[in-house]
Length: 430
Ligand code: ADP
Image (cartoon, rainbow, N blue to C red; front, side, top):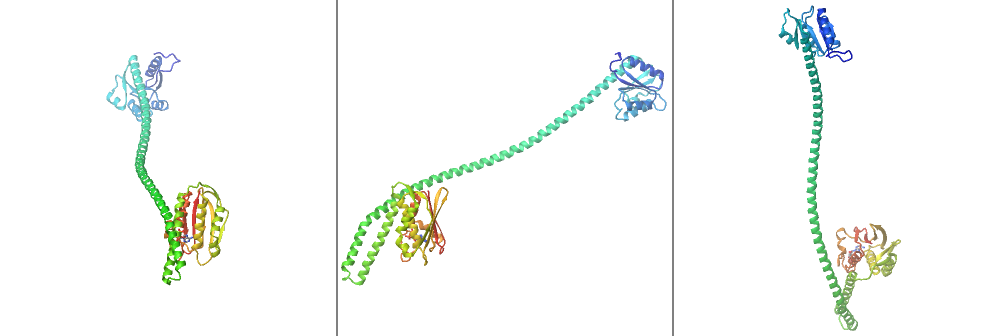
């Protein structure tokens, strides 16, 4: 317990007593036991000493002039800086000592004079230890509180993140559910389309089969009709030639009607045969120079071109892959119509070509009578005509042949027109 001079003092103790004898006694005793006492002789000095450098413990005499020990103690306990310093009162035996008041003003203990050293030391030690423990407890409390606060802060962050995560999970679940629903709808849609597609495929096959049958029938019928028709026509002509003088004018008119009907039927049969031949052709496709095709079609139409003084404008045409006789037929039908369905003025026909989605797009435009919108799709059907024979002769098979040829060459055909403003027939070929 001895202070060896070098070691840190056991405690900084303020001794307050107005009796110098007592002060000396206590101070010597404390120094001997390793403490660093400071001695003051009145209450004012004690308060000042506490404020400038708060001690670890105060030994406080009660009976002092000006300010007694109770008052000093009260002052100390009212200041935050000095409130926690343990105060031990020292009272003389003959003094009237109010223990209850001593504890009430905040003292931790008391010692009666004359005191025994060992008792004083034991009390000082025990209160210093208590104070130390109290300090440690307070510090630990602070640390604990900090720890609690930081944990609470972490917990709060975790809670917030958890809330965000929960929201994210709910959003994702909602999205997932929507996706699942859409997937279901899509699956249903795919299923429906597959069903529709297979139904379409089936009806397409059915259509192709019945088309082939019809084609076969048309071919056979027209082919077989040719011979009896030729017989009727030639006998009617013979009748006309040999008996013209012996028959009256009405009989001659009837015979004329028969001959005319036969000629018309012959044209129909020829066109029908032509139509059924398009699908039956087995000629392999070859590179075809469309300039040559057009020249041939124009040559075939030379008579009507010069009759009507038609002007045909065109530029350089490309080489395509196809069947030359069918392509000539295609150009010839479209050019023939462009001239046939003319207005009072001379026909002017333009032929242009450009590339469109890896195909050649041909356009044949005229300055003719034009076609009303409601007829523009129907005119490609076989036998579909918009005029009487008297107005414009024809069989209604020409455009059906054109459509068949174009489709055989992997393209499509359509018309753009306005009545009175001319027409433009477009077709594509690969
Ligand atoms: P056809 O000329 O023998 O009647 P098409 O199949 O060639 O038969 O034509 C069908 C119908 O389309 C024609 O009757 C005619 O009314 C109309 N048409 C075709 N080409 C033209 C055109 N360039 N201008 C106006 N009408 C046309």
